[in-house]
Amino acid sequence: MIKVLLVEDDVRLADALAGALEGRGYVVDQVRTGQAALDSAPVDIILLDLGLPDMDGVDLCRRLRERADAGGDTGIIMVTARGRQSERVRGLRSGADDYVVKPLAVDELCARMEAVLRRTRRRPEDPPVALGPLSVDLATRTVTRGDDPVDLTRKEFDLLAALVREAGSVVSREHLLLRVWQTSWPGTLRTLEVHIGTLRSKLDVPGLIETVRGVGYRLAAADGAAPGAADGATGRPSVSAAPVQPARRP
Image (cartoon, rainbow, N blue to C red):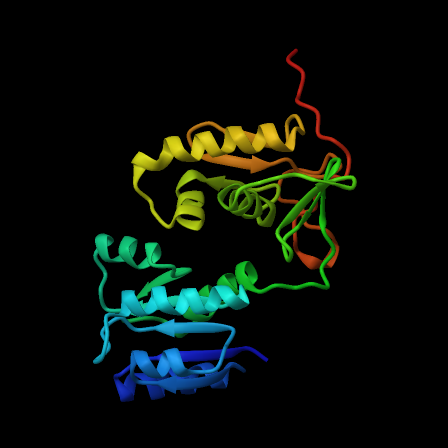
């Protein structure tokens, strides 16, 4: 059962949206102010309007993110009429996982909520992911080689996690910048390239992180399967437990 906190001061809109979400199986609590949101019980995902009567929604997002980080798995989606690119970037930089502009389609919002929950919810029952000689545990944010830990910075692990979740598929540079640095500014591309280089060096598995020229990066797929192949009924890309060797030139 997924619990949603809807932070929206427009009563008619909030009631309509809450009813639509409840009809799709979500449990929805509604609040009208930022302070009420801060005082609320923990939930799985927060839908946050920016035009609140008592505080700026971006500042509220930062405070909610600080509180959410204690639990580590609360998703935040901004749902607002502010559609300018500068507003989107400001919202994402404040800690939001996604940004949706009103008017919105409920089915699209639900799809975005599901995507955020896949990225943010911790599932301790899921086994660690094997990357050649490495083991990556997304729940505990650890990487090990046998019994030895691989020391990654927070950004390096976030970058690896973003690639693991899309294993076998090409992940664009823009997506990685938004997920890890909460920005799409082209000036940070060099930062991304440096982190990719450092991550490759620390993981020390040749061919594991492939560069797709002009697009982004891809984590090598499993057991000779084409990139993006699903692992059984889970729908998740599989990753080979054997070291991935770089392709030989003819």
